[in-house]
Structures are given as C-alpha cells and as structure tokens.
Image 1 (tube, helix red, strand yellow):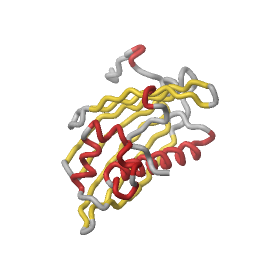
Image 2 (image 1 turned 90 degrees about the vertical axis):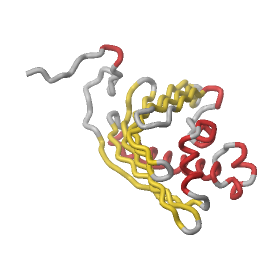
Image 3 (image 1 turned 120 degrees about the vertical axis):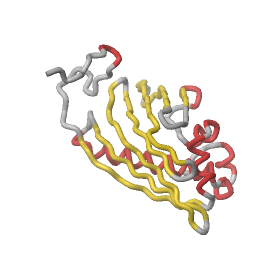
Image 4 (image 1 turned 180 degrees about the horizontal axis):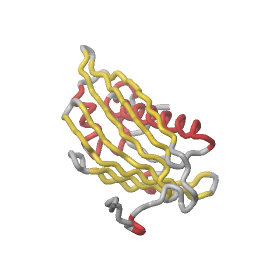
Amino acid sequence: MDSGYVDQGSDIHPSSAGAAPQRAVHGSFSLSRDFSVPPARVFAAFAEPALRTRWFRMPARREDVHHELDFRIGGSELARATTRVSGVEEHLEYRSRFLDIVPGTRIVSVYETYVDHVRRWVSLTTVELAERPDGCRLEWTEQYAFLVATAGGGQDVAHLRGSAQLLLNGLSTVVEPHLYGHLGTQGRTAP
C-alpha cells in the first residue's frame, strides 16, 4: 500500500540533522494579557507589517533580520536572523502559516522554528481577543512539539514560554505607548 509520502530531497529539513530521531516533547501553555485599548488596535499590531515588526522580534540586530508577512488565511510569515552569541554565529528561522483569522477576534497559526538549519520545534498558536470595559484581554494558547529537545526539553519549554511573554511585552509597548513613554514609539521592548 502506497503511503502517499514522496521524498522531497533537500526541500525537507530534517529535525535531527542526520542523527537518529528522538521522541518528541509535547505540551501546551496559555498566557493572558489585559490591554487598555480595544481589540481592533491589538489585532492591527498582528496584521500590519509596520506594527508587527516593532514587537515581533528575533534576537538579533535589525540589520541582520529578514521579515515577510502575508497576513490572510493561507498566508504566511517568514523571519530569518543571524546572531552571534559569544562570537559563535547562529542562524534562526521562523516560518508560519495562518489557518484562521477572524478580524479583531482570533488568529490561529502553525509555525516551525529552525536553529542552525535544524527544525527544533513546531507549534499551533491561537490568539483570542475579547473586549472588556477597560480595553481587551488577549489569550495566547500554544501547543508545541519539540522535535529536537535539549536535556529532556524542560529548558526548551521554559525558553518558549518566556519568549512568548517577551513578545507580549513588546506588543504592549506598541499598542499602549502611553504606558511606556519613548519605548513604545521606538519599537523597543520593555525591560
């Protein structure tokens, strides 16, 4: 019986870079953040490239980052960066596809992250926005599978969750610049 799988050669990036595959580390987490602005303003920060690149950041200098955004159902996002940690060059790549978009309400995407050309993890992320009397609440739910985990995956999960929290901090500086003074206008993340 034909499984339907076709080897795409170099178009498929191995998760284990030639090593024996390891068992995936699965899990999920949720984060909530209240904003003092309406859902439409927060949604715009996801949808508009000029706003998105101010808070959706790779850990590299701006000039070392490439970013593309096609924000629509079936559209994609690509971010690539080269960073140097302790003098060692590291290549990072984020690829996502938007599965569902309800303006002002919900964004569902799937993404994969590569570190030095090795696919480390994949995630399904749901962002939901709910109106509140004083603004809106954002609920971020992420279901992940680490394909290449380090030391059992515990540190990887903490890193992923911490990165999501940093993204939400950056989002806050963009949509609520009045709370951060000059930080929001320059697109930096809050300390």
